[in-house]
Image 1: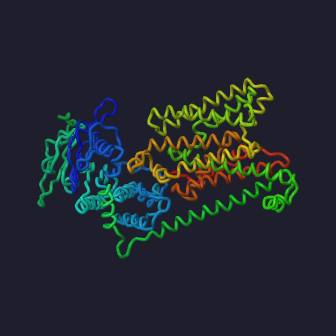
Image 2: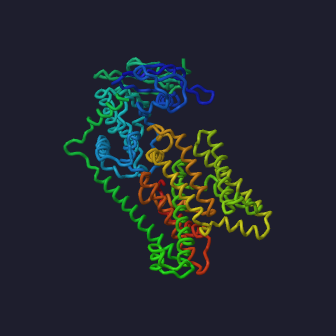
Image 3: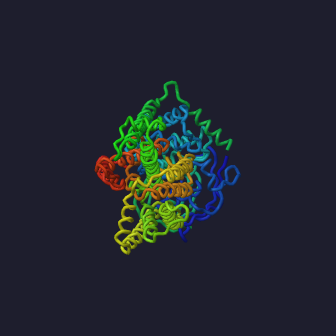
Length: 259
Length: 364
């Protein structure tokens, strides 16, 4: 299974935010979108999910997906965790299967939703109101909702932004396992470059709405790219277990213009 | 699609409950508690409906009224007329208007994501008032159905207000902010027009206009009750297929869109339903404040945000407030009936203050 993004272009008014992006995301692969604030990571994810007006096409296994149909195959988790809703945690998770919900909820579906919550240790919060939870707990609930949809393509915008270290690791391990075991295509925007290098198969460095680099962590995370994308001076270390470690040293002037 | 179902099945299988699965007992208990609230609401509804039929200036006792309802042929024609032609239409209208305003209130607060929204946020009441005022001022009457002139003018003016708000909101993607702003602008526009009509009216006409604006159930009759009943039934059936999508909308527009809700289409549809419900209610009884604002909040406190329960509970709560107000309007001043629009505002304001204090630090 492949998701082919063909010359995707998004504009906010007259300004292009995503410029002619073309790429292929494969099943079982976890892709991280990295880049500075405003690089276009969230916009690219939303456009692929069909939630923004965009030019270009998205094909799943060669079949074009109109924006209105993408929700059947693609689950997208927005970044914001501040949803001011008094829905209960279990109701939020159940809404992940919106298309198959009827007036009477089958017991089996409720049981599965509770089990899904238990993945991140949230089953005991099932009747708590969403607006009574911490930002991190809310993020886990929405992540559970996205996973509960059992999509073919899972797009996540900063899925670990509000989480503590332990939960960051748990979530990223879970996503790797999901991709490997079910062949789900997973793509996420991440700010933590070390987590991106450790838990994803492929990195896409976005700068000014364009790909600056794409490939394995060692091909993308180098001093030049980091200086151009973030405007920082950084060392990139290779650890004993072949993992990369980015060590930011100082902010320089500002990020360079996209090539 | 087949692949999607297979994928769903695979994840279900992977997440099948283990030997000692986490229990959904807490959620089931919550649903039972909510159903209990709904039963309490129905019980209160029945009691208030009976109280409303029994209450009135003519001294009919509970037994006499019930006897009339069960065996109308065994009572005097005067008793029959009082119960069937005067009191029953008023009670039915109170129920229907309460249902309409309660449900419209929930819809407004859902599509606008705003706890202060009510059916009147979009200027419908002011528009209805203006329509009625114009007819009262000019003395125009429809041939054959003169009783329908004021309701029809109010109804058409409400639709005009809805059309204005819709026009501006549609141009901006039906965003809640634009809907509220366009609604407030429409409200002020029709209020100004209404004030102008009052300003140029003679004292007698002014009195009639003001009385209409108070809102009164005494305008209920067997001619207009079925019309409001049909409107409520139609509006209820229209949203039933969207009940889960409306629940999802409580997560906010972007999150609802992310789980597959066509937010713009849903807002347009529900906007039309609200316009229908509000105009249907307002056209026949005049302006009745606070029911559409307060009933959804009471219902939400009792049964939460799941619209399968919230929508009927809000309608039921609206009906209960209307029935209670109707009873109060008849017993506060013996021999006279205070316009119900005044009573709902009088009991609604303190209740709103209570809700504000109780809801401190919580999202609505």
